[in-house]
Length: 107
Image (cartoon, rainbow, N blue to C red; front, top):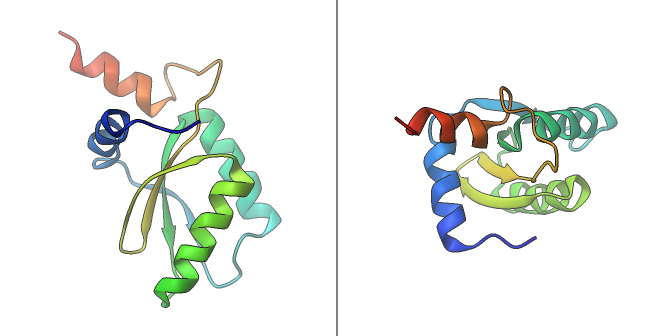
């Protein structure tokens, strides 16, 4: 499920105005974090995740693991934030950040 550069650019535009819905701290990817990741991706498709880890290499490793375990695609990282995407085959148009943004931009 590789995203094109155009898709990533579009998702970064949408992600700019999003607030983090998930925070990963020193405990890492616990069952609770993974369950919340699953719920958030199913509901919103595109989410921001905040990592509260001081070391850059630790964050990179954790982001990679999160994407593998969450079966999602990394769109962008800036500092301690990561923007991730996973397509929902039956999205809720009222919850999906992708669909909400598309309907707002149409006249």
